[in-house]
Image (cartoon, rainbow, N blue to C red; front, side, top):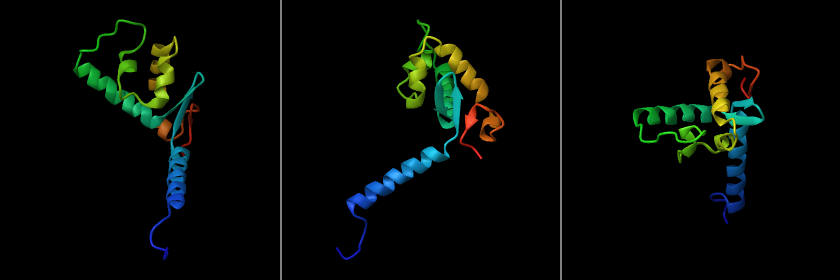
Length: 112
């Protein structure tokens, strides 16, 4: 082991540190007991735009149709389990603005 490359434990440690660093640098929106990443809200908007252009998924329940999308970010999935999912998504989208990235909204944390 002449010092070439990283050992498995060093590689694993580096990966864990990178994941922790990413989560520390993320901007979060906190609302009604839920905490979601700002990036997840951007993904939610993309998914909703896709569904608007392809009206194949009609809502037949109280859940927003995006809750059935396989690409819904993991941190948004608990919102779908809530009875108030539609109103929570509406409130999160109202908070999700450029002001959040600047930390002008008290619901946003983790930004500088």
